[in-house]
Image 1 (tube, helix red, strand yellow):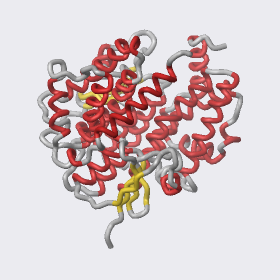
Image 2 (spheres, rainbow over the protein chains, first blue to last red):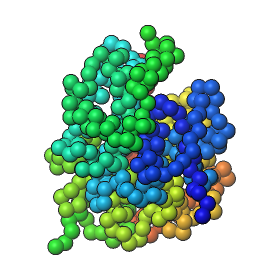
Image 3 (cartoon, one colour):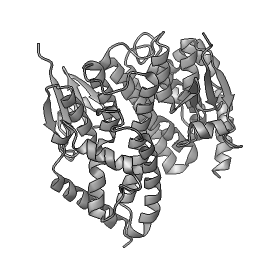
Image 4 (tube, chains in turn orange, green):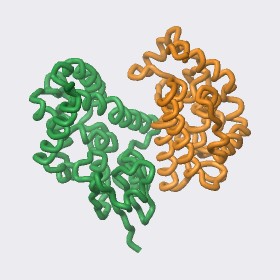
Length: 220
Length: 224
């Protein structure tokens, strides 16, 4: 049987691409990766595969493209069922999807508002980020991971976004661990996992990237 | 013991209507709790503390929030008359387009709806581009799901109703049969489909509600 053809269109700093890489690693799926030059010029394949949003990640499985990272992680879980990323019961799956949706709607934008603004706007953005993390702490409860004892779907959706927190902390002058110790503990727990540790970029490099973005946006 | 299913909704919410349709298509008995969003019930705030929005489905005391999440929950809990495709790729396409509908399409239609007259042409460009993408998806199909109504039809259901409301209030034709033959055809089929057709909110009330909303937006946008 021919080896499955799995190709990921990627950008190293994108937490959304990291989600897909972690999911594939958890499933032990071999894949090829192609780095996109987001600023220099997106590839023909990317533009053809994701004409609507023109963004990474794009996963091509046997040539069929899929876009939007949460959607892709869902697909990976359904196509390679073992080990499962989503919980077994319909209710627990609905909770997982709710948290993924909440994270997608709120977290990255709140962080962006911290490094993109100053003064009162930045203070409001920090407050919002902390509130979001506190809600997530509520979702975590006393569990090791969002789904319970095992690393899974919501953890994969959330953990890559934490690589940008060092940059938020630097520009926003605050400390996530002080404000949300439970969330910080969960972060450390996930970072101890091989699929996560091998995939995520160094927060120092993310900080340098965000510094460059700030210059590009004309923010001093 | 009989299952207890409750749905928190408003009379006009297109998001909540998705769940009404899904439950009826599956033949699930449920209790409706109508909410006044200007005066939310303690129950709603207890079941949906983060967003405080409708719809919320409560099944044997356990709440599920966010309409697209609820649709998947309903489909996984009551497996007859499946709403989502079985194939993982087809399923991922359905989810992608449902999100497109809620993010890009809905935003662009709304921007057109509340645009001042001088801004309407520009707003229409994006709305029409998004409609063309949806038109492509319907080629060769009666419904997004195929021969029968499914998840993606329910996800786009708000559009089937809202388009004619927008057209009446704004006195313009957005989805004409020549430019959008498949979309026009889908709207006709969907509006009249079994179960779907029994659930539409009263049109006269919808016209008044959206007319008032539009007037408020336009008044707020007008420089004094």
